[in-house]
Image (cartoon, rainbow, N blue to C red):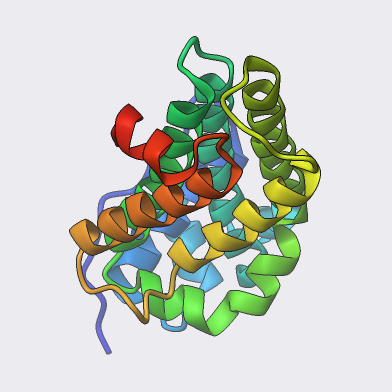
Length: 212
């Protein structure tokens, strides 16, 4: 099949690796993962195929690098929220909402996003161990802060953080349960409402009093 000619990505100061990733994202958005070749990524980046293999061993490794790039951005925002002056309950709400909606937006910016995630889910999950560990530490940090402030009554912040991290995975692609962004947001708010009620001193009444 003849491919539509696309404008090349011009290298910037961020280096060839970043150029390759931008080119790969553009091509995968257009043709999907399966139909995009390393040769096409190289052509889009304005470099030789061999140069791509200096930075990545395979097309799947490029995909995993793109996933890691998105999750680093998500983690950066979660870290800023965790370090903010918000009350612990509000921090947890915003951290989880930010995580869920940022990933949803990135995946849906690619017409083939959910298809790619579904077909590579095991490799993606395996590659994101660093993200899950850091996420758990951030959740635990905020829960401990809530305990110290008297907002939460939780004997094991570590176990609670582990549970919240696992619940967070219900809000990641592929989205079998959700058809719209608003559905994910509503489910996330509902999930957090009940989770926070479970670790709050005043239970559900405390959550209702503090709002969303």
